[in-house]
Image (tube, rainbow, N blue to C red; front, side, top):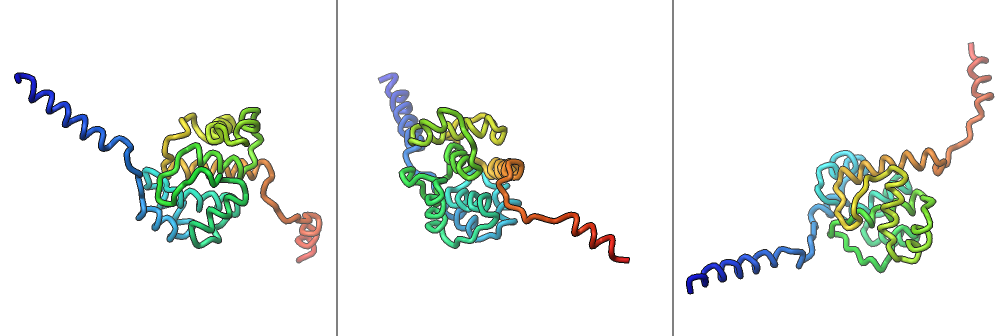
Length: 195
């Protein structure tokens, strides 16, 4: 009887602690809605910078901006379909628009978009879907695009913007962007002919 109150207190604390340990989904509906409504510059420079977690909808939009330079899609389903067709995401992941996205999923999308060469594990096991996100994260760590992390951690808005900037620089350095050829001799001649 003497310790009955302490047992009841411990049981109550255990029940309360168990209620908040990942039993439910962490949905961010308002954030996902806002991330889909703002223009590209506002999304990258203002909206995402303030977000402690990035939603799947926002990440898909940013990945299409990285791949195409702009987001021409108007809905989450269109973005998901476009990324699935490019092989940047896997349908079996079952990611929902309002859920926070993890670093491994983002790393996989970036690796596919920038055409990262990858190592043996990334190409052998990652392409089969065994550890695909883990090996993609390791590849981005090797390329210097992401710091070392565990693949199941949520990515922050600032981390995503930093990653996209580094990935953009990587793509430019590797010649992934198409540029119009400029004939400098003709331009030079035109400039010297004018009085």
